[in-house]
Amino acid sequence: MLVSPYYFATPENDWRSLFFHYLPESVMVVDPKAIKYFYEGLPTGKPIPWRFWVKPSVAWCLYAFLTFTSPTCLSVILRKQWVEHERFAFPLVKLPAVGKQINSFFRTPLMWIGSSFPVLIHLLNGLKRHFPNLPSIPLHFNLDILLIDKPWSAMRPVSIMVYPSIIGFTYLLSLDVLFPFWFFYLIYKLQSAIVLASGASFSGWILANRQEMSGYIALIIFVFWLARRHIWDVITKALDLQNKIDDSNEPLTCRRALIGLILATYLIALMSSMIGLSFWLAIGVMVCFYMMAIVLIWMVTDGGFLFLPAIFRPSDYLMVAFGSSNFNARNHTILTFEKTMMFDLREFIMPYVMNGLKASAPVRLHRRKLMGVMFLSMVVGLIVAYYADLMT
Image 1 (spheres, rainbow, N blue to C red):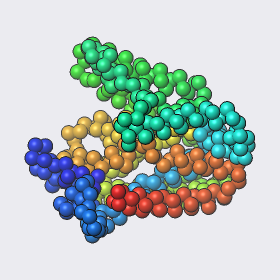
Image 2 (cartoon, rainbow, N blue to C red):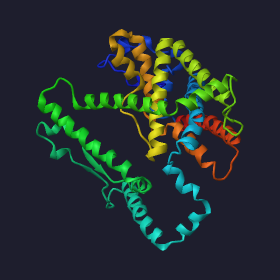
Image 3 (tube, one colour):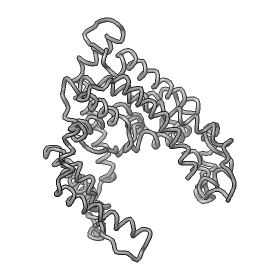
Image 4 (tube, helix red, strand yellow):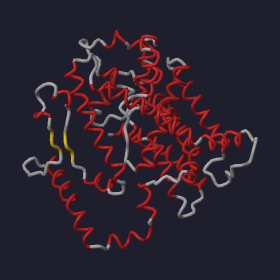
């Protein structure tokens, strides 16, 4: 993100004249040698040119910390509603919540026999990467060769991937959750073929993209409708208008959680405006991001999915609603940074925070101390991640 536009710019793609003048050089690495060293490695004995990396790294660490803080505050606001009022299932928390009882499970010979199969498969396939002459057990089967003719070609890519670890996680899920997960994937692929056969001007992927965006809107309305009284109680408690909610054992008080959410959102929008993005566009993107975040965490905590990346970005809502032509080239350029922070949500922090708060209940862990540890781990994680990325 900090160096890729400069490294991959070529005379053929003409990036330099197209959008380089919109890039925020104050928070990017622009030194040609530093960029080259990042991708191609440092010469032997040459130290990392920290003077080019410190300022951009600090700026983006702060931005990343804010994008961690606001969803964390949102998780705190929703915790009581989902844990105590609606009593979500939290399937991923069930196994660690068992505690010492799991010891007997690990003493079962059948467990070790069963777990040895995926261990041996991954061990053999891992050795294959280093020693090509060794055999391997394929876990990925590409079916695209069977879908050459139209309209079936619109269904590509189609593949079957076997993940033993994911099979173990899905064992914790109910059939009501598992069935629509694969059924509607097949519907999506079939829909793509039908769209191509009909001669429509749009692709099946675009249709599925808009359907998922609409589904998120429907789900967020449903979630807020169920939580309307709780959210109102949180707001009035934060404003000191009533005392219906006892937040003495909450990870954060209602006031701190609400102020943290608002302040982090404002600072994110402010930082975005400082590098060229419209302030109100940044606010709109954050609102859409929170909507996506709530729906995703709802599916993880109540459904039990390991992770759920969305197939669209928060800004797509604004582009569809107002038209991409109504936003200038600078806004479009800066919005490309959104993909790193708000599109690939596999490592999205909200499910981990909510699952952690749920797991703290059986052991009666002090939630505010836990929240302090979570924020500390975010800071340490950011520093270690940036350092490790540069060192490797």
